[in-house]
Length: 357
Image 1: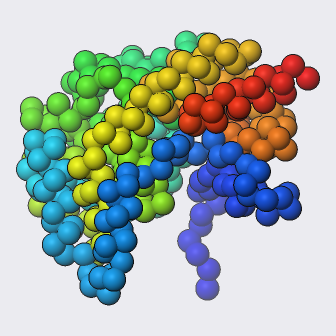
Image 2: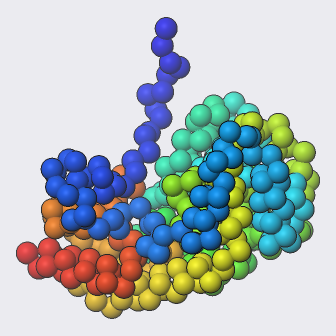
């Protein structure tokens, strides 16, 4: 007995965490600063923490009413019907649900290169094929309809990430609409807005009222600081209302995640502080790192350092964890998450010392 052939399935390589690296190096976790995974340096909202504590004694029950309450709150915030909100186990889970709802065996999806590996992984899990379109470093990873359409060949799903991970580049709402107009009627444009709170660009949700070929993925992991709870959702066309119940797993979002998400939605001040901290941190990195950087709409900056693996390893020995982007096909870069003001300043200082050597 063995698994099906998974030889062409890449693995997702997450950025190293503090506990993992500390054990590897035999050092105290307190010696390390985690700027590798685009986590919120402010942590979660205190309201979300309190909601988790208050709900802990009730985890013996399935999340029924609270699931409905969170769905309604998200729908109200985006001014869509409740049925257009597909709650999921992180943004990854939302991608899986969209794949289940659209992909037949042998269908192909079109994904950005470089880009988030899970787009292709999810397609392959559902017996789909994967094609890529290139975001060129020579063009500062610019995202335009022409960039995508130059590789488009009638794929069932086209993935767009804005702001894009790991480069930080963005695609405007106007360009997303142009792309949707130019692709086939049976092509779904999936717009991943995991970092959407950090940008001034309007959300692709604005296309849902008029189109049935665009879906939006959002997460509570970044601006809301709830990465450890794995909570995300998709916003889908109104015509898709009945599909959620046929593609979701039973109670796919836990009760504590729902409670925390509902509380986090009620603390906009916390999100505003996270967004402002990201903006200031990006500016500091751009202005002070002694290496080329790429403009970013997210809570991170891609930095050209020559040898990403060597620089990331040197920083790790200094207690600073950043993302070596070799796994994204960018071996000459690192991605640095914006931390608190003092954390970002420390990381930039250490990086400049490593680069100087």
